[in-house]
Image (cartoon, rainbow, N blue to C red):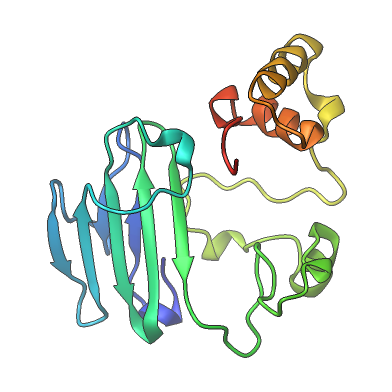
Length: 185
């Protein structure tokens, strides 16, 4: 998290295996505790909180809670090789992004509609990620991009979980992993 919202400061949270919690590239909270972020808010790291992905509920929790300017809260669930996050905030004039524009109309939050409003992605100079892969116009993964054997395994897992949204579940299970077939149930 960075930019003007953070008055030029940058707060990063990575996964457990190869990531850290840093503020302006300095490691903070190597273990559970609380950090005051330059008068911008607090960062608390503990094992408390509701998960974004209920399928991960059997695992040990490592959750970073951020109370940031303007009443914005961010919770980051740190897993072995990935993170999940929840952002909570009030709508703001002109708000738009990857998850939509917060106007209550999901019909204008499709990938095409978002790209038409804000472009293909974050410019490389503004990216917080170590590696940068620019968005490719027109290229989107579809279920047909999933190898047949992997697709069959994904569909079987979705059926076994009793999922009724078989196509969406199979897509998620194929590209993210079968551990997610119970997500959102």
